[in-house]
Amino acid sequence: MADKKAVVQIDDKSFELPIYSGTAGTDVIDVRALGQQGYFTFDPGFMSTGSCESKITFIDGGKGVLLHRGYPIEQLADKSNYLELCYLLLEGELPNHAQYEDFENTITRHTMVHEKIASFFQGFRVDAHPMAMLCGVVGALSSFYHSDLDINDPEQRKRSAHRLIAKLPTISAMAYKYTVGQPFVYPRNELSYAENFLHMMFSVPAEDYKVSPILAKAMDRIFMLHADHEQNASTSTVRLAGSSGANPYACIAAGVASLWGPAHGGANEACLKMLQQIGSVDRIPEFVKRAKDKDDSFRLMGFGHRVYKNFDPRAKVMRETCHEVLKELNIKDPLLDVAMELERIALEDPYFIEKKLYPNVDFYSGIILKAIGIPTSMFTVIFAMSRTVGWISHWDEMLSEKGHKIGRPRQLYTGYNTRDIKDIDQR
Ligand code: CMC
Image 1 (cartoon, rainbow, N blue to C red):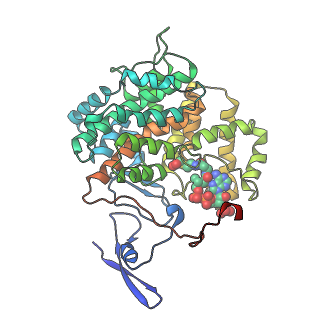
Image 2: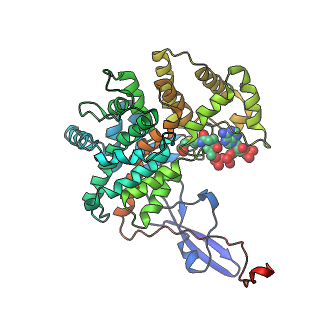
Image 3: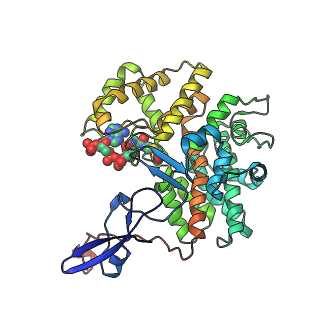
């Protein structure tokens, strides 16, 4: 309920707009009455717009806080695991033993995909980007589950959520195997979620593959730290697609597409490409200089964030894991040297300090994934896999609300006014 009001004066008209306070975060002004009076608000990039009410995730960018259902991400990363977090995001509470066992069992038993999914891959060129395959194949899942597409039935929505969480690693690993020309690897039910993903990525029929517990733990952390991030571009895309009543697989495919861009989920891939472009430690100053030059479009990828203007709490956890993995694997890779030196220089450089540009989660996750042996083109795929639970939780939350509306923004039109068509020979 509104406990405060904003008064807006437009010409001789005055409007009282209710102000709502959430349980945490910035108050919001309800501007809906303006539309009824013939005015729209204008906010490109949604810099000042709350698009929905949500109980799932809270971010305080200034203080570097990220809460899922009230729990700080640092505590979740320390005391929980990805499947527990999935349960929390979907169900609202952390599971007890019996609930966890049941949930893990459900997810594990949905990891296989229909054999016909394999034939979808055969239609792609072998050099297709795995994100292109992921967009297509996730959307295609809707053609396999006709009987479960009633979005008004909470049980059917839940089954779709479980299928998506379970099958995304299988489809992602298939996309990778297809590009390297190796046979698809079936999931194994005795493995954990993270172990199973590494198994499907790296095992081959010719020999046994033993999953390293350190790498499985690092992978699980990467999944956790990407699981949800409130109303970001891809989550808003999923909500917008879902607001029209589209099926969950189509909505998640829309989320995958939105995530792909380098300003969003594509940043981890872009970051590794940038490290390759820099190539050696002695060239870092040249690139840092370019990043600061207003006339140069070059940016340090993996630095900065729309919401976190202090530090990214996910990056703090990821940094720890990154240093653990590098120490454990004892890898000598010049790119990793470039990354570590770039981190050091940027954290000390006044330009980055003043603009509050810190390494973000994708800077460290990119380095870990590279150390684990995951090819760069798979980085954003792994982000998409991890974020699927966030997307589907928001989609479910939106559909659970009574009277939710189709998303339909307005615009400030600056094109031609009505004009008449001239005959083609007079144009
Ligand atoms: N390198 C150099 N300068 C930068 C960078 C960067 N990475 N990021 C921002 N700036 C500068 C920018 O030029 C601008 O300077 P000025 O005020 O002089 O015009 C100022 O900092 C503010 O930048 P902005 O683009 O207005 O900030 P934003 O909040 O709209 O953008 C961002 C946030 C993440 C898109 C941007 O920082 C960026 O492009 N970073 C690199 C891409 C990246 O790592 N993205 C992943 C984000 S984390 C994953 C996720 O959650 O999706």
